[in-house]
Image (cartoon, rainbow, N blue to C red; front, top):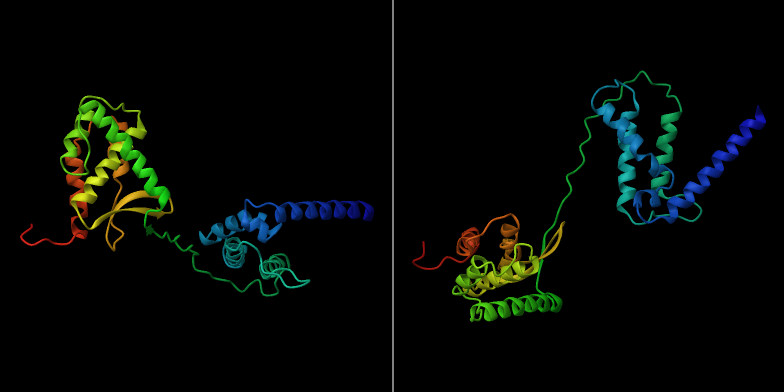
Length: 269
């Protein structure tokens, strides 16, 4: 019996060593890298806490401790590496190990109920960054302008100037079906031409890079605000949806959306 127990203990120890090595070497999940082995138990603690917070387990339960363990695991996940001292495990490891011991060792005061308010995770905060165009951005926009200007000149015999008179030219490209509905690149180039009209007709609007949790986009933004339009997809999105947009109406709506962020002109409505 003692031999079988020793064999099982050796297998468990070997498995733990292998899993520990895998967790510390992998880079996909920070929580497993920072808390080897223990990070794998996050799902168990989440389940225990959710059950406790719904009131399905009364009084003394794993729920309150699971909540604290989850907080410790969350701290570990947000850091790239766990702070360690020489010869001692990281602080997150020590905290979690102590709490797991509390789960395993029976308490002499189990009859004392532990009440805990429902744990609510803080909503994730998303920040927006608006920055000036870099050389790559400017180069991309210029190439798109050249492409759509060449198309207008070859098919309609006119040049684009970034003014309101360009809108009928862009509309004719759609009406004559000179740009196919699946030609996303050209449709977005038309959107850039529309964005140039917004910028040149309104001195406080500028091409910028708009960065949020979804990524970076070229946008036309009002000075000193986070109010932005995204003209690059204003035409392509509608055409891909099976519509034939009225570009003048698209421009008017975009301008109306930006009106609260534009300077008030004398004698204007």
